[in-house]
Length: 163
Image (cartoon, rainbow, N blue to C red; front, top):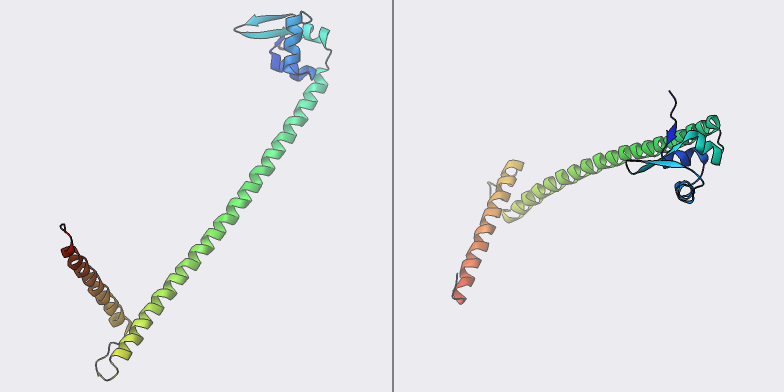
């Protein structure tokens, strides 16, 4: 069964007129409508009397408009998906580069500690030369530095009433 009444929005789509134009026609008495639950309902024959419209033409135009709108949405979605894939690839590459730099820094730090030990102990016979010995040296140096900082903090507190 076909729809015999239309809302203001539906009537404006069918006639190609603005919704406020349809509302003004109702208020001026040019178009008769019934008020149902706070919304105006316009009879199809009454709407056709005031503003003749071709239902088949309007349906075809509406269908084309919907297809164009859907195509725009699909294009925008596709562009966003491509952008997301590009950003993920860049993110992956940056993470790999960061990990590579961290490995390099760790290796260089260990090598620097080994060479420092070698310079400090040039005349001694038992100089740590392996990576594990150098990394243990790094940990030992960190602990000693932490203890020195703690001692400095304690020593500075004697000039004040609080510690």
